[in-house]
Amino acid sequence: MAGHSKWSTIKRKKGALDAKRSKMFSRIVKEIIVSIKEGGSDPEGNARLRLAINNAKGVNMPKDNIQRAINKAEKGDEDLQEMTFEGYGPEGVPIFVECLTDNNNRTVGAIRALFTKRGGSLGTNGSLSFLFDRKGVFTILKEMVNIELDELELELIDAGAEEIEEEEETYEIYCPMAEFGAMQKKLDEMNIEVENASLQRIPNDYKILEPEAAQKVLRLIDEFEDNDDVQNVYHNIEMTDELLKALEEAD
Image 1: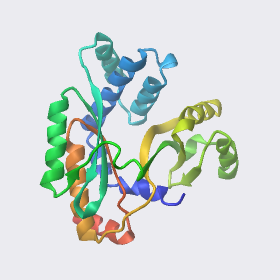
Image 2 (image 1 turned 90 degrees about the vertical axis):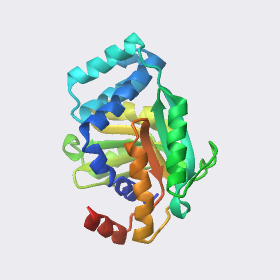
Image 3 (image 1 turned 90 degrees about the horizontal axis):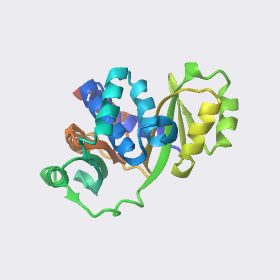
């Protein structure tokens, strides 16, 4: 399953996005609200809420902010809906957009307009399902692991891990969506604190573009992610060394 480290790099441009703390916190607040609406405000009995709170802590979101989000959800003031959009951007690159919104018409109009503006096209739901696999992705800090990588792999494979990739300061663990809960439980049992965990849409094939063409698509990705209703955007551009160099020079 080569290429997952490249998937981390695919979102490199989103390092700049994630630096916008207020935007990042806003997305986590929305996730907390939706998770409470689904399963209640007790993290012990609501795995999705527990995950959202854990991710909030992973990006150093203040405890007061987390509690305010929980209180807001309990009051039921916001009615957020999950929406997904599938389409093709410039160069025929498939793009999958996940949203949480309190106004479906506004979100549909905005997403459709961005596809059209950049020469893309919005497709029907399910049209890209064969291009992406939903997988659990767990990020853990190396400093939190007190065993060797080989031993870690053996432990986590039993819980459904398909691949573990070593980065400079972290391990990235990939598992099937169906094994997401089992992987969470296994890491808890091993007393390994998770820096971030999520279900992501991993492309099962990558598209190589010339840097200039790729940057056109990445500009569209940035515009999607600048929209307040958008939670995540996925695509399958291969982040080649040539493209990474071009992006660094453009920054």
